[in-house]
Every structure is written in structure tokens, then in C-alpha cells.
Image (cartoon, rainbow, N blue to C red; front, side):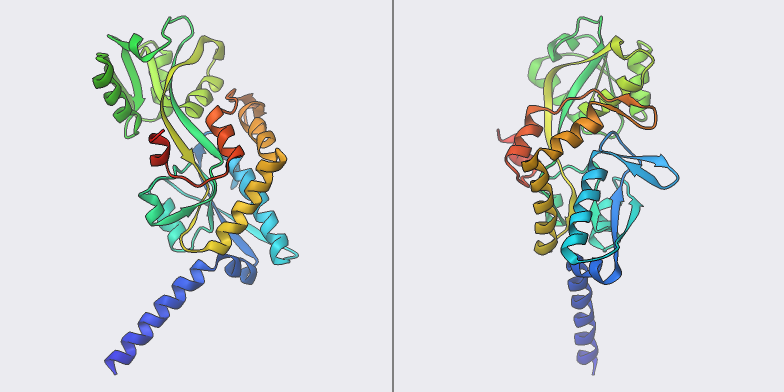
Length: 298
């Protein structure tokens, strides 16, 4: 009897897992799809308030889901926007709360054990922002300077690696968030701010005098950012990848990139001013879902 109950419990768990893994079936049956979005991931995914979200990845996902709606033959399909954080985004994808996560998630080998990723749509480059009149153009010129970064980010580790490798002796000063770190640069308490390029560009765009700043120096890290999906659901991944690859082939993804990173965007209608990098263009020309570790080998 106990074995029968145990077997039934296992069967129920397996059935639940299978149901979650069949995302297309779930969407077709419910007529809804859940999109994971971020509140403040730069121009990739951000809130406009009142439950509205915008950004490069948000619009890509909206188009992907429109293609899936056609594929499933649904007359109507509701998109439910689910705000996620760095801490809960993976669990919410795993447990079926979120069908497609459209934020700013780095594709890495560790995460690939728990989730899947669509083909890379954005390649992030960690860079240095300085005041335009500072004369600083490289990491070597940070010697003896105060360098700002945001507490809890990987930029701190990158700074330390470069300090050891190049013998550059700088003092780290920490902002509690990205806006605070930029304020350290703006106020002169830091000579440079090291962070993801799109975050630097976004803060510069929102500053009082954007022309007073520039992004310089070597690329400290290259990270593939991709839309995250549940693991072991090849049919859904194929549908998502097919849609994104069609946008890449037609040139539509390049137009969307310019819309969100080059032209003025809401709510302030100021441009981020970050043209697509060569690494991002390469990812569009050669669709792949390789993790960051493969980029580090280059």
C-alpha cells in the first residue's frame, strides 16, 4: 500500500514536471503567457509604471509571443507581465510562474544546469566611464585614482584582476546602486566608474550634461545576455529561437536595437547613445546559445 502511494506521488510529480516542460501546450490551453520582466535593467527591460514595461528584450519577447500565438492558432492570447529580480528569476522560470524571462540575464554554464537560454540577443561589455576632460583613456591611467563601482557586482572582481595583472594601484569606492556610483563620478569623489556599458551609457544619458562624460578603455569582460526559458523543453526553445533568428535574418533585430539604444526612449525621451558592439553584431550574424565561458576562451 505504501509503495502504491509512493508510486502515485512520483507519477504526480513527473506529470507536473512534464506539464511545466510543455510550455506551448500550457500556453495553448490557458490562452496566456507569462513574461518575466525587470524594473530597471537599462534599455533591455524596465518599468514605465502602472504595470507597463518596455525595452529591447521586452519588445523582442512580445514579437516572439505574437509568433507563437500564430503558431498555436490562438485568436487571442494574454501576456501577463511578472516582475522578477536577480534572486528569484531562475526559480520562477523553473516552477512555471514565468514562461519566458526577458530581462538582462547572463548565459553561463552554471545557469545552464537549471534553465535553458534562447540564442544570444545582446552581448554586454564591461567598460570605464570618466569625465571627458579627465585625460583617462585606459586602465593603466587609473593608477593612483579613485574608481567607483557598485557593491555586489562582478565589476569589483574584474577590477581586482586587472590591478594584479597590470600593477595598477587604485582605490575602490563603492556606490550602493548604479545611480549612487555615477554620483561618485559626477561629484568628483571618483575619477572613473566601472560597470556594464549599457548601464554607464544610461546614466550618462540621464545626467545634467551628457557631453561631460565618455566611455573609454579596454573591454574588461564580454557577457552574452539572453532570454531565459525552462530547461528540457526543446519544442518551446525551437519556437523562440526560430522567431528570434527570423528577426536577425531580416534585420529587424538591428532596427529594434537602434530604437532602444540609439534613439530617444521613454519616459524621459533621451537616448542611451550606445551603438551595437561588434560582439553583438556577431551574435546576430551567427545565432548561438553559447555560455559566457566560451567567450572567455577567445
